[in-house]
Image 1 (cartoon, one colour):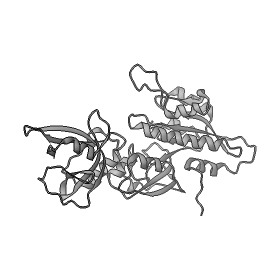
Image 2 (cartoon, one colour; image 1 turned 90 degrees about the vertical axis):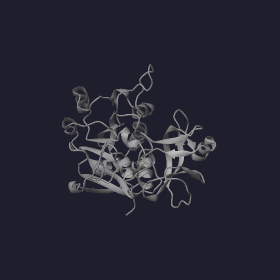
Image 3 (tube, helix red, strand yellow; image 1 turned 45 degrees about the horizontal axis):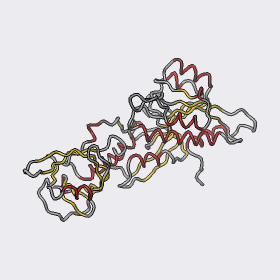
Image 4 (cartoon, one colour; image 1 turned 180 degrees about the horizontal axis):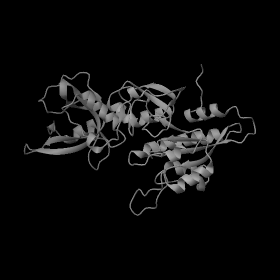
Length: 350
């Protein structure tokens, strides 16, 4: 069966409404997008805007069965002290496309009475969310007669929660995917409308994978099996530290998972001229697992080979660090960093 070229949300709604005769009033769709918590929100903000772009383009067709009646996103935020509050990427994109500003809703919480009143006036048949990042109360879910559906970057019921892509990479999965599921009060537990699998290689990072997952789908609705559900709890800064008493594969997966935010960090020791260690707090940007290492050093010594730092890890494994970042500096290659040491001995922290 040929794959439909329309993106996931458009295909669902169009299939539900294509029986409408020509000239029938278009059905109202409300789009909700943009995560609430920076700095991890920036990339998802752009992805939300790309979903909105798809919906607006599809709805502008003369034979479209739906129209985007309103856009819901986070309130304007001030990025730097003293600066004017700026709209989210979703709101800015809508404005740039000429979407009416009075139909761009920016509630702090989706349960606000004024917002729910405005939403009811729009009379949406369906709401579509993509990385919205705001809890939807039952009073919201009761408004659209066709329900609310969410574009979710995992193969539900796997990795329910705030960080499904990062958690999947952290676990080193070989396969993930994207799901379109009805939104219910329980966390990411609604019936699945469509899903598609996607193979995961050992090099892809969270932001790239998230981008891919927001653009693939396959129609096949089925309820979730709660007995197979796994959780993807919100990430925190403490998880971003690399400790080299773990195997290299585990650390490599962590670097991939936390590539967007908060980035992985590690403490190294640089032996100064007095033979005393100076602690280096670095961000680890790109890594891979070494397939072989014939270098000889003490158990804590970091070596250099080819274009990578070689860090000894648990289980006689080695992590190759190809890019890193020092505090206040730009990302640099391992070779440039190593050349700057001028022969000083580098150790992993214990």
